[in-house]
Length: 314
Length: 221
Image (cartoon, rainbow over all chains, first blue to last red; front, side, top):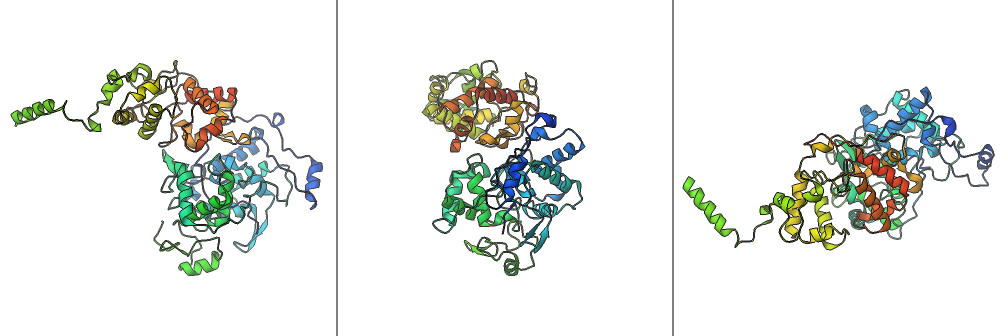
């Protein structure tokens, strides 16, 4: 199963949306791939080339560019620009750094060309737009904007623009989060708590609730009622460990070893959070249907508490 | 009743020199104005009577900053963990209780009116300073400053001090100090690491951008 564009919320509440004055397209660096390289990439024998998305200044100053910028605005301040569909304080850019541009941070340019895609999560072929809807339902703990809504169209347009020149149907280097190898020892809550205290509490707070200024998340909550819900990709240990090792602490990605990353992912994901929207009315049954993997702690007992039990963490 | 309170007052005055007073009895405002008489210079000499700092001299604003942040800096100056020819002897001449009292005192001062409108015009939104401040430069692993220091650089909690409205000379000097390793009291070495990626032009541009950011309305720190 491909973990393209995994979901959910961590560091980094925002990126201020200063009014940006784009340069004309012609003056900006374009996507870096020459057509010949794209041809190379499509053969299975050679590794696909590294992809560099176009510079932000290359967003055209025309009606198309306006929608691209609207997509960027939603992406970096989701509650501020798509508030009707967001049930927490998170923004897309919390888990997709640099406004969705950052390699190894599930960049939009790495996801765009991988859809439509069959997803085990819902058992059918998903368009890119439907994949975005999933982000809203789970990572943002909100509700799905209609496929033809301005929000989805803007986000699609932003992703499309960013992927210009990228091959279709090719998993590019830097797409998704780089998988973290199995740790020497099984993930451990107590060790994770220590890793958290050393590396994460500075920004996310000792209680995991992030830090807010003027009602906005600067550092996002990692668990609890204002974080991603039990259906979000980030609640899975492998996804969380991968994101964390590549990208956390913020600006110091790659400094935690695999054991630390798994341990702290386990610590984060062993906390209570909003219910899975697919909840059947019974935790055990919900686990069996949607969380039947050692990568999910939903419906398991941690420190004497059954995770996902209604009434906790909402 | 009145006589009683007068007698109590007299008693208190008599008792004062003999009994060591708890921290809350330290008159931080007086120390700020006059020093502590034991070698600590008056704060207002460099940071202004209202704690607004002095832009020309590059002395930072203290008014309205987070108390825990201020206390850590004072403690670090005193211990030498943060180097400063001026602040080392000053903070070192303050007792731990006095440093605490001053940190609380300055954190509670209202934002000075003089800073409500920045002295310099805000640099263009598509310029280098704005770009580094709000977007960063991820090709160099540099996030936007506001991603930790808050929208517009208003500051976040005890570890991410406000940059908005601080003197450009102060911000630039700190970035250079992080870069050269002369300042190294940052959590997780975040600033030492980030500043290493910046060049002189970056530092100048981003410092000027933050110095020109407006502060929230006076009186609402």
